[in-house]
Length: 112
Image (cartoon, rainbow, N blue to C red; front, top):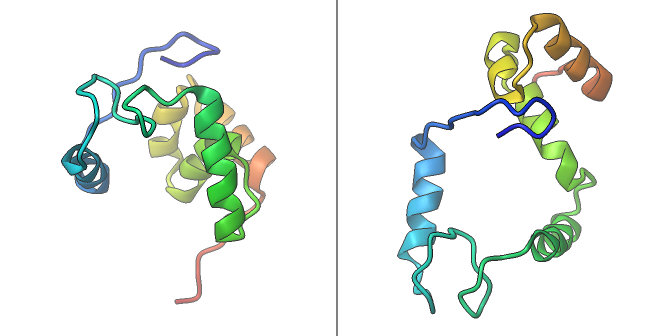
């Protein structure tokens, strides 16, 4: 559910996302739980623990984006405003255009 608008959003679990979830589910776990992401003791990972681990991974990967940037980056990287509008839960294309331009500037494609 989107925080700002309260819009419900379903995400199809296919392709790479399905493969990642399958790999996670294949790992041995200390506890069987409805929570996909767990700590070493089988407890659900808290928001703060997830943030801390993300920060450490970001430092190791030597990238500068923040956890809060993932949503905008994912929408921008599709290169398709019509597709980006749905996961962002924007009612108008204009809002999506504003959101992407305000956060990213022009979208450049890799040379190779």
